Image (cartoon, rainbow, N blue to C red):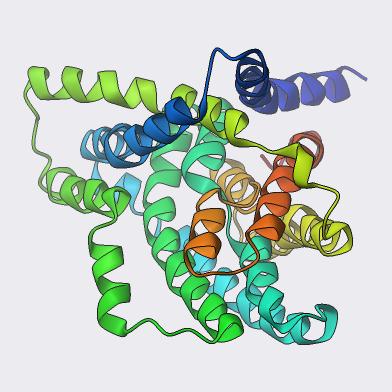
Length: 316
């Protein structure tokens, strides 16, 4: 009984603070203390400055051998690619409207790793979780972006050149922050205290501000449309995808922090950036928004259950 209570307490300590801040964002938006301008500006600040600073500081302070878990990263890349192929096959059979198939596929595989996934890893494991998740986040995010463009372009009959795709990846602030930190980590360079402390201020800002903006941006008024497709995506994203990753991780011999990071990152809700991309490319933005709202709410339960099960089994 004590072991179960300990597992429950650990599960709540991981997921509880994340969703308290998300709920605070929803509440502050409702009472008018936050508005759309704040959300837009805050999201840009997080994406362009605060989150890259967090990743840079985390990786640069860690020895490269500790930060670069190539087994974990390799499983993330291969697993994402395999799930994407399966979803592309399934979308042709499960989604009646051809132009919605790309939205469906992206909603199922593209996790909000940079905000919610990273915050969950920090809550679960502290600095060790942040280090393990940082390079995983950077490299798998590149694959996310490539696959998202591919599936949306195919279903919407649009086209983006390889040059445009590469330019978008090279200019991604998260990738820039990680790439800039790698030589520092590799060479074991000691950064000046002024740089570390200044960067840490922005790093400390990133997750709370990102979660507030995510909560404030949720629109539950759109949930009446495309309910069936939205719920199917939610089931795949929050249950099937993390289950596949956890099983593959167990087979590969991952335990502890590695297995926990794999589950928390793959089980995070659909990335908010998926809505921006769908809207920019002329797709079904309402469906994309529904998917984000439902998976964000549903992940409160599914992530807590996942943490509870792995913790009770002594695997996390």
